[in-house]
Length: 251
Image 1: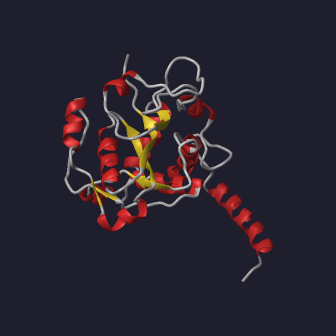
Image 2: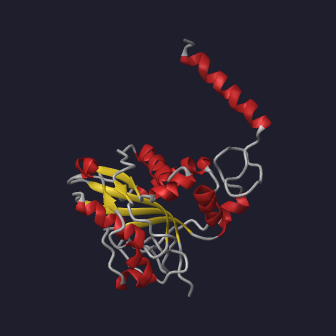
Image 3: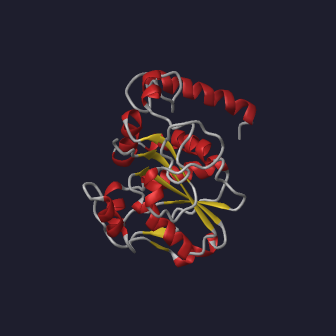
């Protein structure tokens, strides 16, 4: 076996040669970039990363200055959120929307690692010593067609970044609920009622512990609410939610 001091330069040479044949491109467009897994300047500006004051429950950006005290948006004042705190990395528009759709439908597994780093930055205030990272589940039929669960890719990348246990199959979705697109807010919640359950054999992994629940997009929050309730039924002590993108309400 070659020593590490020999292997390291070889890996660098290998990556350099690969970059010549396949030069790295922006995660959200085909613009060439210096380093793989990054955004070009235009897409970085277009990505609508959420900074500053945001809703403590769903991550929606809010007007005003962040004084360190929790703020709640109008939606979360009127909708019961079973989880504790919620964070979002980006608004679901522009480059963020392109990346989410690529991850969800375009086999863009390469997006998971950089997204995991962004998620980790937003997750830092939520992480506890007893945190377990759990993804929102897909129905088996949808996962069969897609061949993967995009939320599980994100949660695995996040778990590596924050060095916490990952339980990708804690939750299951035995009832096919179809698409939520086009449904009213109330219909979305009714459609997800009792649609998500936990695996009894995995419950011991989270019993009495903090769960960080991960999804790609939050719209109404119905899927995250159903998943949170399933985590509590499995014995979780507390649940916080984290999403890559948050759909913002039109004013």
